Length: 189
Ligand SMILES: C[S@@+](CC[C@H](N)C(=O)[O-])C[C@H]1O[C@@H](n2cnc3c(N)ncnc32)[C@H](O)[C@@H]1O
Image (cartoon, rainbow, N blue to C red):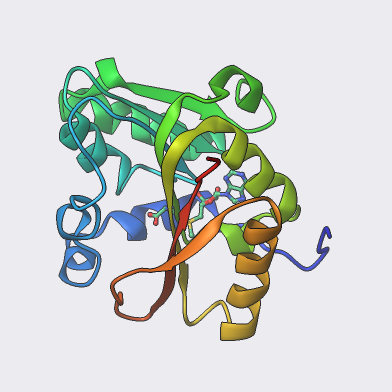
């Protein structure tokens, strides 16, 4: 159900999400390496300036690909520059929601989807989970994380229920400081 009070993280806040101190509690390699393997196809939905996208591009290597989707073009512009600087621009694909992001084109192609601090900003959460379900391969994984300060436990649970309604199976994730998190599995057999 669309929610009119939803606020989107302003583009300039993207810089604060890149601060090196964030690594103390959101270390991309520690958080994501249990799920990511060489050659995987990944979607970083709500990627902002790529705090997680760039490390994920390094983790999947030359044979993998990271699709980076965001609704704000300025976030993607900065991400593109960072991808060049980190030498991963060949396996980073930028997708602007409302422009060239088309879930149908990624049907059954993804191994892993990261939803980090974005779902609470999306008005139609059911549609998001439905699209993600269709883009994942069987046995694909979603790592779903929300910031505790912005999202209440019952709101997180409500989003989880929407994901489960779209066919996902919920698993516990390892606890992340100041965050609510879960693993969502697509198992269709
Ligand atoms: C709080 S930031 C989190 C960024 C990133 N995941 C991180 O953890 O560093 C949320 C991001 O989601 C994006 N966003 C908000 N609504 C969106 C939507 N409907 N579709 C795609 N991206 C969206 C915002 O533009 C912003 O870049």
